[in-house]
Length: 103
Image 1: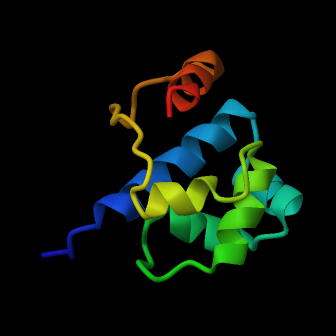
Image 2: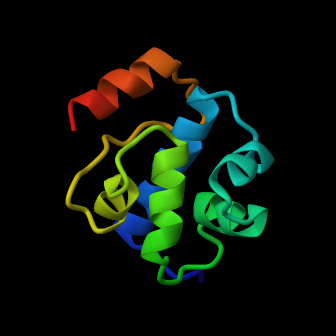
């Protein structure tokens, strides 16, 4: 039986994926924009490797996704929460923006 994914790790995966898609970026595009490796972005989005993320990595991704430098660290450490949504459900960029503005 696979290990349960901690809530902060799952939230981080969801937020990174949604913001990346809202910006119409591929994982490679986000890697290029942020300077974070493609492998690390894949690990974060798929939470295959549940490990501690460096603050610098989260800052680079936050900034590349148009958020403040502490945004993804706050998501990971559950200082801010993001409403759950069906993973397969399409979400418009405006809906993502509205959701994150409420945070």
